[in-house]
Image (cartoon, rainbow, N blue to C red; front, side, top):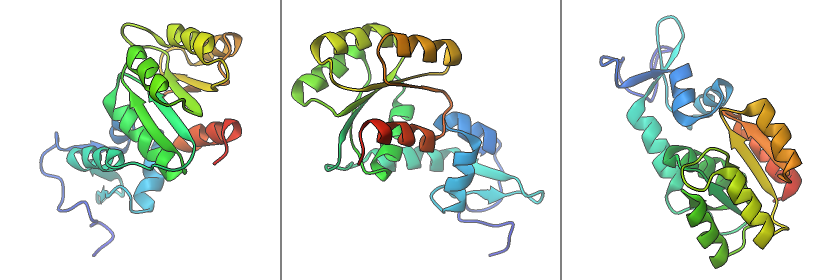
Length: 194
């Protein structure tokens, strides 16, 4: 295999099927450095252009998210991931499970409350902007009903302002999107060690 080939397959022929490093990072909702690291580790196959730039097949990125969501860990501290974006939930599940956590997903505030009624999580990762019950409303309800569960909020729209407001409202952490999963895991481990 030459330096210009990889496990991603033959050279790109269909522009819609292939994503640049930046596009792949946006697609998965992570930093470009995370995509590079996963590619270097062989977790995400990449094609290298003659200029040395990486290209990623959309189908392989979707498969990565799907593979990460299948089965899931059953041991480790339980983390509830609440976000209306299924792809991001799948990515967070993969990152957290690799970090030693068990994960439950919810796509809405109502589903999150139902999940907590079934089994109280050790940590909640909560998107700020969701339809219906938004992150702020859900944070308040969580505090009223389950005051001791730590919450890390995240948002792609209100990074600086959101971090301050999240702290004022009682969240234990805040991460802006796109985020590096290592940063998120570091915050999670500070609150709930594995």
